Length: 407
Ligand SMILES: Cc1ncc(COP(=O)(O)O)c(C=O)c1O
Ligand SMILES: [Zn+2]
Image (tube, rainbow, N blue to C red; front, side, top):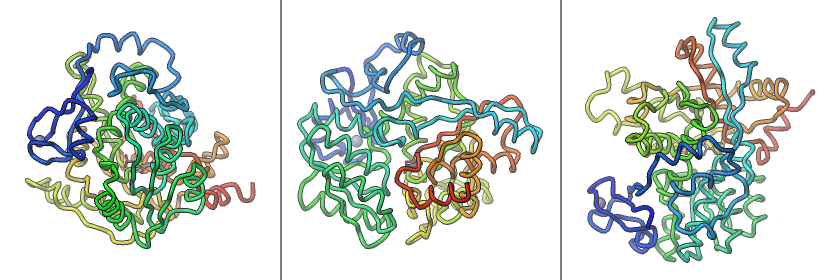
């Protein structure tokens, strides 16, 4: 075996995903659902990979928890371009007198379903194929659901998706187009999660383990390798729209994983962004900041029931991952930022005008975080900023129509 799973709580070793699935994805010793993958790999070989072209995240096969290459499933995801967007650099200079490099990680160009959820779905499909899993279920606000629908259908896995009622018809149709079952729950994302958990218990169907799911984390941590391959270094600042928080958890895991071999590589400052219509993590962070981050601050967060937002992808009203994410953001010297939902269309129009691409609303929340960070003096001369845009506008037709009207 090239890897094992280690329980984050008690350190127990779980030999592989086979046993992890047999144990219902909890530690057999302490019952914790938080485990991390550890490799018996020599990371000096990573150097060679970083010098080569890549056509998907499978480029990093040696550092992914799959044993046999014949189980690989791919639609060319995860080796998407990191582009320099000079209109944003000009904006920083002209409006704030800041000289910075602004790089955009074009996850909307992923080959599966045009979101940064494609890598996790590809890895999940491959691991399930290798371990004989036939059925799976998940609760999702849309992008994970769509990506998993596509990739799991490629390996013949029966998949049931529970979505909150705010999810767009475009997303529901996309899931169904892959022949998978979608249950629209009459409530918010927290309610959809509850329905999925009930389904999992009652029908003994394997369920996604949420944002700490080692499959999702392992897939997404490859962004660390991609930053090094494409930029030759880590960015100074990493900006991402946050909902559950897989992105920041995975970035942290990736950096820790290679720490012994690359001690000079450190976490970028993480700026995590939420729109003002569903911003429980920003609120929790502000409260903690005001109190000077007292002991246990991370356990104190508000829950927003039924958030009313046009960004259904970012509608996690119960920020259950805050206790895990906030310490990561803090150690990175980062912050949480709030942007106004009412500005999203104008920002998306600006991107359309400058780059002729229509990004999805969750990507624009992330971009708005860049403007907000500038406004708050959180970006400095000489820094390299990475904006992780997570989705195209394929499944946000209403949003795209507003962006392109009067063109
Ligand atoms: C486009 C996009 N941006 C941001 C997010 C938030 O991701 P995370 O799980 O890292 O909070 C998601 C997923 O929910 C997404 O699809
Ligand atoms: Zn344990």
